[in-house]
Length: 168
Image 1: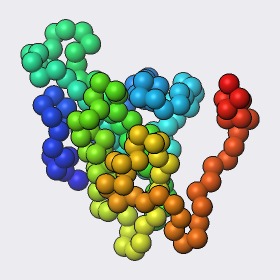
Image 2: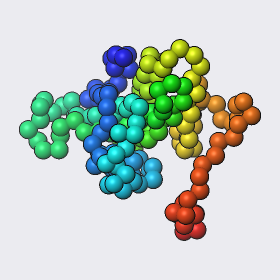
Image 3: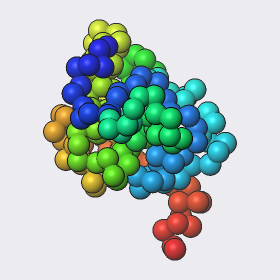
């Protein structure tokens, strides 16, 4: 897949792979997703089918920048969980607030969907995700629909930790 197919603003680059566990935890927490523990972050990439992330480096600075902290850093991410056959789940779609509204989430999602189209075996695929309200329009623009198909209903396992959070 050519990452050049996704036009990004100056300073941004789409990278195939996964951000380091520390960056993964920061992206989740700072973008408003539920935080993850270091133990969870340590193995998130191994349980994935494919992932991408977007880095940013200030284009006005010399490259490579001698200023610490000005090297390209992850500002957005997304990944696919799946069996590589026909079940695929889009997960961990996140873009840091200061980098939103620049088409980064759209580029991440289009990149993930392109990978599924390129590598999934011939036949129908089942691609799903759980959308937070702010991401709903992005997903709808890319062909996702809300509701039921084939008389199915999306469900999640309620955990004790989840029950505690609702009571707070």
